[in-house]
Length: 253
Image (cartoon, rainbow, N blue to C red; front, side, top):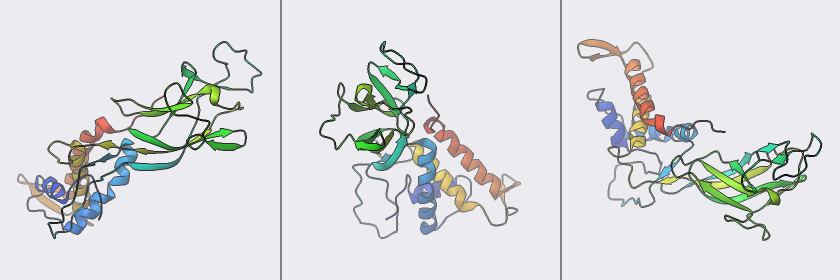
């Protein structure tokens, strides 16, 4: 069964608000909804899921299910922020040497790309020419005050792994020094569009994909005027973008 962030009925409702009598087929609506998944995750760096959802199988109409679990990110390459200046009063060595840039005592922040990380599956940290998986290493421990820990901002969802700089091997540079695999996602109570703007935005974008004709000169009546279908589709996308604006990812230091 295909998955997506809104239902077929959501798409039909979004279209009916602008295109009277518009009724896309269920199969086309499902394809349009599923087609928005990768775009949405890329733009927002987020994923939403309903852990309590269950399909009772009582309907024979083909449908689309919401995501029900976090997503796994495998092999994300991250830099360890560094500086030519040694922290904590150490003597600075020759200019080619760099040091992990600490912020919380001895800890250095390694940003993860996705919001609302839930758990670290593997944490490969470069040691010389090799990488060691700190999750699998019995000599490395996870937790505040230990070798590393996961931290998620409760307001923005921005995620980071904080690593004790004293546990990191010396290096000339720290670009691509960490390769992280982790799960991410934000549980929601329901994907109902009335209470969840993401579902409404996805429905609008999926609807816009369904109404753009091959001939952009095709027109439909709108309050006595002729308005191109393409223009109405663009309006749907613009309204969706306004709903998504608070969730879109922005670059951070």
